[in-house]
Length: 274
Image (tube, rainbow, N blue to C red; front, side, top):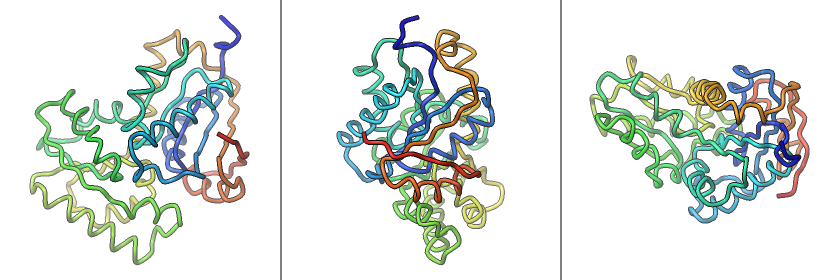
């Protein structure tokens, strides 16, 4: 095996903190592997930016993770998965490197949660505009009707730790009501942004009983376990000494403080220039 593709950590990328909710589940399911998490906090949010900008930012961060020795990178960010993943996979990957996203693993299994085949998506404006979930879900499950609603205030509420504020209550209630008006038969809501699980108590409070609420972390982690089993040539290039490294493009002290809310334990990050 060439030196440049010798075993290395699994890279986890997000525009900020949200990907830590996915990383937490991946680490729980696959604790033996080495990981590097990179949050592009200096340029967050991605959800309101153009396709071209998200693609360029995502590509820069993915290649930084390649530089740090990663052979496999997970885009633990719905906006990056929606706006950048396919282009990177088709045009930019060096030999022996892989990049995976969070949209396909979720879309593949969404049929297991719905009986009415009416599924709602709560996401950032960028993810909604991309139509990625509609296209992916309909590719696997053409019988499912998908309804989308953008929640532009949810990420700032989470990032500012205003999870129980009046504003959070107001916007979560309003956005869920607006989504549910699209179809009275909707029985499943997918949280298509990795920040949103932190608002789960409020989301459950304002969602009628009997509607499934799906967070992505566990589904993405289970999909990665399956992927590594099916692709031993990728799995053997993932090193295993249980090390965790965290990098941010912004202030590490600020990152450490907020990241604990998402990851569930204290972490120590370093600044990195992308």
